[in-house]
Image (cartoon, rainbow, N blue to C red):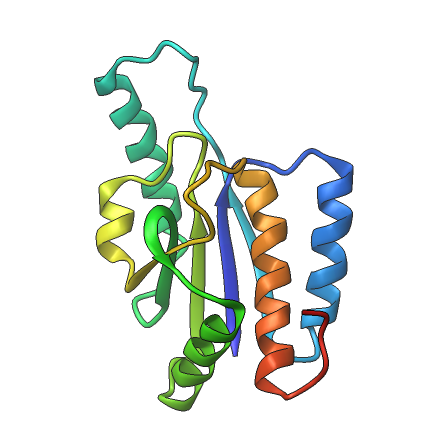
Length: 159
């Protein structure tokens, strides 16, 4: 299975990089994982709604350029469906069973995802109703994908 995690912005925090590197390394025995970062737009705090839309559109276009036509897309969105780790594992296993070998998880920037990215997504996934920094979300996502593969393989993992 080929899994891409497409995110907006460059990861700067060393502690997050180290965590992501660790889980990416662990995932290597289960799937090919590709971490793709697209450039973020400068977004000052006091943007108008029209300016926010422009920023999200530019970031969205960069994201969509990284997604192939045969890729199953899971957009991380606060209004998405919440799942347990076991449900995520079952869904990934189902995708593999039915020949969906390319999966992309998409993490938006500080303003979220543009509507065009949401429309391209096959599903929306939420990890919480709380707002989490998108850089931290990448670490949480990589850990949960790793956990999902451990569950699929019937291997022990801390609960």
